[in-house]
Amino acid sequence: MNPPELLPILRYPDPRLHTVAKTVAAVDDRIRALIPRMLATMYDANGIGLAATQVDIHVRLIVIDVSEARDQPLVLINPVIEWASEETRKGEEGCLSVPGIYDGVERSVAVRVRALDAEGVERSIEAQGMLAVCIQHEMDHLMGKVFVEYLSPLKRNRIKSKLVKAQREAERA
Ligand code: K1U
Ligand code: ZN
Image (cartoon, rainbow, N blue to C red; front, side):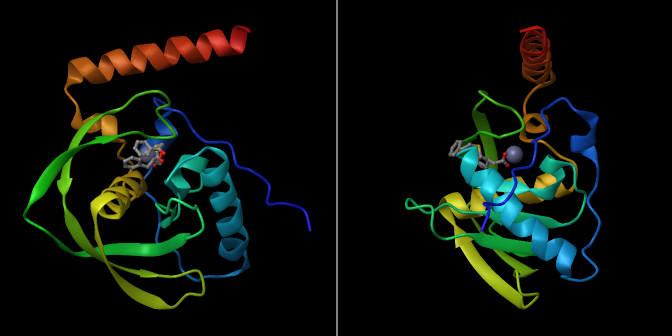
């Protein structure tokens, strides 16, 4: 069988990254076909997460794998944060849509999230550490929010200019 076809990842400051994703009405063939492609795209890019928004598909679907062996995929459809710890921590984040940029973002250290899995079964997941951070980062994507929006306007504008310049140079090459 052929490996799943990779999906192109939108790059900041592409305005499509600010689209608010729609609820998945049913875990149908379209969603079932999208999941392996999103996982393959995330693994190929060495990411630990990917939101459908980042591949220009605006439905509430995220994939995550924070395992060392890259063998524990997690699929969250229509995720809802049921509880987030009051305790927060500032940690370094990156984003496949903002290549080469890493900066600190303050997040809850633990969350409980309710979502459908790849089979359409409702689950509740308690997460902490990197998984909790990644869930919050990916759920922001579904709301059209990119992590650089937590940074100062000065930093954000510098990042924007850098990425626009890099993209122009890549197009010229
Ligand atoms: O949403 C994405 O673009 C995926 C993103 C997830 C993420 C990484 C770090 C903190 C929060 C969310 C990435 O996978 S970026 C690339 C990466 O593998 C990575 C970067 C920094 C720390 C750990 C992993
Ligand atoms: Zn991201």
